[in-house]
Amino acid sequence: MKAIETTPKLVEQVYKVLLGEISGGNLQPGARIIQEQLAKELGVSRQPIQQALALLRSQGVLIDAPGRGLLVAPLDPDYVRNMYDMRAVIEGLACRRAAELSGKNAKVKGLTLIKAGLKAVSNHSFREMIAADMAFHHYIYHLAENPLIPPAMESHWLNTQRVMGEVLKSEEQPRNVWSQHEAMLEAIVEGDGETAERMGREHITQAADFMIERLLENMANSAAQEDAVKGKRKLMRA
Image (cartoon, rainbow, N blue to C red):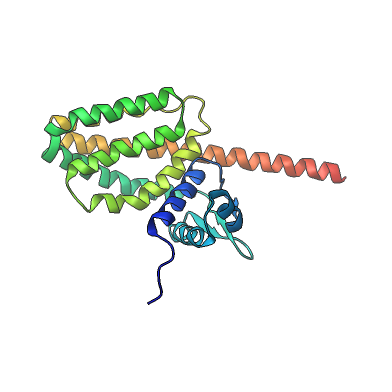
């Protein structure tokens, strides 16, 4: 067998950095990915870069560029809607099971996570908001005691991070979802599985409506800006 030259940990680190750059808006949809430049900036060889890029490509975050290379994939509102539909079902299940199995144990850490989320909103840091939101939902998955939920949600969170990053970076006043999180936690603590499931589903459905509306607005604004730039170029050539 051929010796493994790249440790999985290094590939994972590169993957997380690249995903963070894409989610954070530093690598916009349509941006070309240059392996040599990434390797130089991250101080690693091309091999872990290639493996991380291959993984992101397989997950639909990157697409093949015309000719050669890779581009950051655009966000498809229809795909986002389908993704949130799937999330609503799984999140509802997780909330119900968390209430039925772990309600009494949820309060202390749950409130700590909510405080962290509120702090992120007050700091207007969309990176912190994304991290806090993920931490809260993953805590519910933990409380649900179903080992199939976290891996099932992995690909959904991959795209959720992109959507949240794209929307939150353009918001002057970030949308505060933590009152909804607090209500979900309260239902879980009280052991009310039915209410917890309903709130979990409604929370994701409302998030989907908001995110898709903002995505469409951003896409329309970007298209208008591109048309304006093209118009100026035509005038300059005339």
